[in-house]
Image: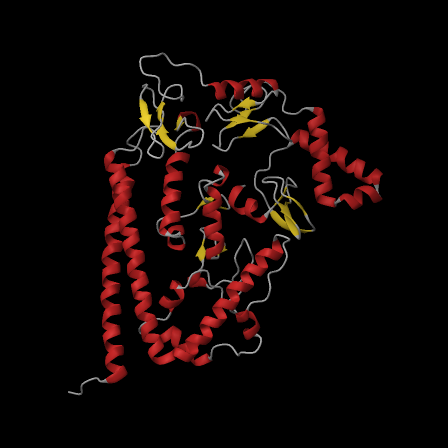
Length: 447
């Protein structure tokens, strides 16, 4: 029997380590799958506004720990794969690294251009890519056939966008993506890692993006989104998910205005809760600072908000009790909790005799839709034609004003997103049905 020596022995040892690590990852994934299955069986057994039980908290912690272990093992396998690759393809991997760094810098430049910012200075990898040939065909074939599977290396490299001929691109930033290094939504849209991270981070500040979705289809978390974000961001999202999953009227926050940490659901029984961040004790009933042996008084800030809502004729959602302001369109309101109601009387939609339109709002919305569809230049060049179009649109809106399904098309030119207010310097998305003008993110993740 011939013994292995030198680099062959090292490569054989690394191969065995990679195989062992892969087995450990498989075991950890099976355990995590069991935890997720147990969590699924427990859903729906408690009231929606009830606080998490100790068992639920323990399962969440175990799931988080197991996910962290899987990440660590995958990083270890990634490192071992790099060691093996370096033994045989160090020079070519150097070229790959250069390509990846240059493409990452190109991605940042593309995002800056899309947001109307100044382009960053060209970096050294970008300058070198103008002089260096791409990795050889030999290495690209090796990445598809080697036992170690250099695809593992590619999965481990964060936020990398290598130019390919696959034709795949990120639905948000339009950057080129590789299939096994991008996230595919249930609607078949692709996301690069940078845009997935941005979506999750933004959802922590904007509840209208929760639950995470694309084309109104929920995005998978445990076996999808969570693979592309850090453990720290994952824990932040899980904490925010607990808050968002509690009905708005039942949420209890720390009464210390400098803290305002979410404490849980207020519940039906009066109790005092202590904030883990600042140790302030809050009353679950009136949501003020705890007042032992004293009756609750109305929350002053809530009273002020109600007075403001009454003065401005704002309405309260009958589903989640959030205060809603009508800015444009008809009196048919769809709240962020998906409750549909009448803006005039707050009754569930189609359960009242209120009129659906105010004539001035009808005219304003018809004007908005015509201008969005044909442009301001057409209105200025042919005012009579524009006025006729507005009149026809008003009559059509009296019969049908709801947009049953958005059909998005590109509209060149700068403008402000009607949904989030973000200014886009190059293009907007326009709905062919309701003529709404929105940014790319709102068109796929919000509406």
